[in-house]
Image (tube, rainbow, N blue to C red; front, side, top):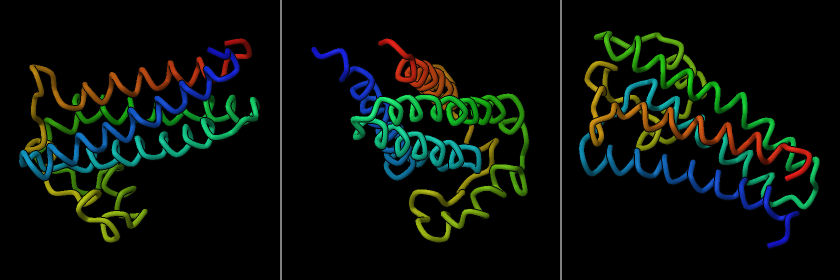
Length: 160
């Protein structure tokens, strides 16, 4: 395998993982009745932003663009990790998520009005607190955000 293509493959795999995570969330929502809270929806947005950044880096043959994509993945993944932790530690214990930061971001972007089947908030944070294979759903997102941050660091490294 050509060493020059490794950052591109890593970025492409990161984009695929992000799209798969949002796809899994949509399957859980539309086929298993797991309705999203504002923090769930915000994490979907962050996953899709990371996917766009990673795709740009993966499609570029320019090493500086690949590095920039990897570096830009870091604050996005950190924001996603913070939202997953906040969802678990604070929001899931609250009966209402109305007017939280996540709710304001989602409504401010207007995504819930444009694509309600993907971005509409349909549950409170307490009601959305469910486990998947014994772990809270948001911990799965947290793990992926951490992995994406690591992938971003690797893609940004000067020598791969």
